Length: 433
Ligand code: NDP
Ligand code: HSE
Image 1 (cartoon, rainbow, N blue to C red):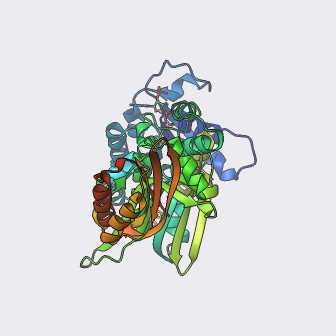
Image 2 (cartoon, rainbow, N blue to C red):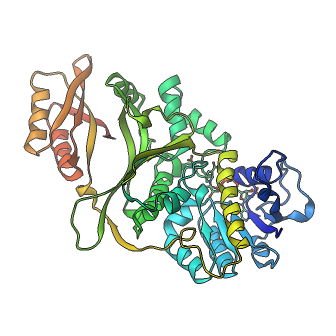
Image 3 (cartoon, rainbow, N blue to C red):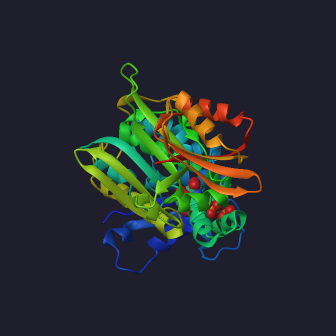
């Protein structure tokens, strides 16, 4: 049988996971034995590694692998943006298909990359870029293609879910838990992308383009992370019957805009009722709920980061490529490749509609809850619940949960509440589903 010869660029958490699967002795499908690693590029060739490699396998020049005529497929698992983008594009132009786990590059340069792949008659496969080990890209491209996707909501960053779970269950310290997530190989090289929500925004951008078929502007996604989350909010949310999770949300919006499909997309820390299936997703696990027609609702769940799970997705892409190369067909498989077919746009921040949680620190004086309620009412914001949760000395903490409302109306109310003489501070604001 013909071999599939690959060059791997990056030999860190994910690269080593790929090597382990390809060299495993377990009873995986025999096609796995047809994958041959021809070269591995790293940054520092002299670094001490816990896997011993034959000397001639390693290089510190990724472009040597791209230029090697023996290599069919380039596997980009080095991370970063500019060099990685260059590597992906050069590989495609050299007629090599690419497998990448790099959501930052795909979310920003997907159009150029998908178009180049099609032009050169090759593929770029990205299963590992979203939700680590969960098959989500392949289902969106194939198994769900007979559906109209209406909504996706999920926990799609493992590091932040790991941190929030430990803060909730063990009252763990935020900074210490982030360090642990880095040590376990879950976090990005610069974990700011994880904790500020940008990694989740990259991923929901990729999923949205695949699900709805249109190019969207990655930078227009309203994004908040978990770096401002206070342990008090976690405690209050729990008292009120909610968990706090970093959610990514993408839905068709009914706001009309000529022929372009309007999409309501955001990423932010959110209250989820404890009875909701996403509330039970703990630790490094991810889950994504997809609402589709005529299918209905499904949830995909599993490990969202880490060496083995992410490598599982990369290797499944390599196997898919090998299977398609074996067919020896000159035409591109339209479901394995991806091209846009629709015009989509992200609605403005002020038009986004959702439920909100607000924690207000104010003077414990008669009538303050009434005043806050009136201001919301005057701005057409309907309140689901308003409670005074903690009072100490002459101060009170008031927690408000609204019904679904546009950000425009909510932000206006918040501004007016913040200048009430009784209000000391708007301590926090979260989304709710
Ligand atoms: P690591 O930091 O663990 O590994 C990066 C690897 O790339 C290292 O081997 C490094 O070399 C090599 N590298 C860096 N720069 C260069 C360069 N210029 N030329 C050649 N090699 C280079 O990263 P991860 O394995 O964690 O992540 C890799 C990618 O996978 C990222 O895009 C990440 O977002 C994505 N990903 C990661 C997941 C995870 O759980 N970790 C999950 C899903 C996606 P050296 O060893 O010499 O330093
Ligand atoms: N840093 C990412 C996460 C890796 O924690 O989810 C998986 O994409």
